[in-house]
Length: 385
Image (cartoon, one colour):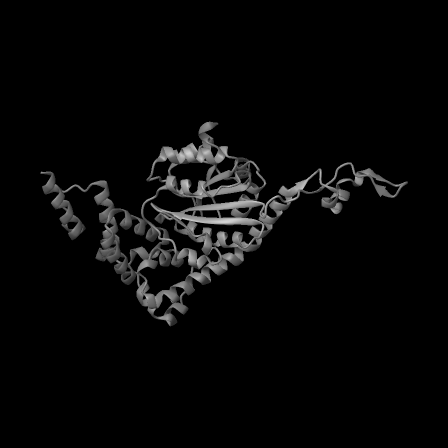
């Protein structure tokens, strides 16, 4: 009986909704497969994928999760044709008339494995135009926030004579001016501590490649490139799904990063944390940002244990549920609350606020307090109060 129902379900998936049979009930997994097939092949819904980049990203994730590799390749190739991207990429004059935006970039990145070789340069030029614009918009704020935080973190009230900042010292002691001697008597010295290491801070961006994180992937690649350009910061970028890839050697070019990731598929956060733990050599100088919706496909208990170990080591760890402007994200609330309870604040952040967040982490500020000051709800806090 079970085999018969299985055969009916497979025929239902092949023939589509037109073959709906009241005696055929699809499992949750088959229902998701049916939705993915309908979005691409259902005549009435043809082209429906093109209206929403997040929907495309979710679709890419679904087909990688629920179909074998060979079928995924065929469906992605068909999507190139049905979305009109193949023709667009083959006609540079047409592409030149299109206004590249974040939505088009996430779609191209998600389908980059099936873009024809002779069209890849056109696709890369579109992606580069958008990432250049994002970098121009975000660079100054990021550099100012991070360098300012590093300067503040390096100050000390007990500097050695050669390390005294005389301008700030005089400013801090003006009330101790002695008119009769025409001088300031400094009761408090302001200066800078000697750097004991080549860099003051180490920043690790650990990036979830699952389909729902498409916009976060784009912004993370841009921020990674900006941070990597700062000599006083050592930046690593690690991307993961069910495997882990270190993209740190490509941080000088966001386009290389974006064409090095593969949106969609499963998620093994625990495995990614295990890799990143090995990168933390000086915990007190490390800011570790996990960018993920926290839908863990690996061992959740191990993931939480590793997160606790990172916090206990002295590193600052933050879980960003999304790095985007797309509003409230979908995420695993249970895992987010558990991380917050361990001292890993979990919340979503817009790109415009991210530089200030990194600066707060560098200064070892209370991240929960920072979030509250910006009207950001940290997941799990409301349950604790």
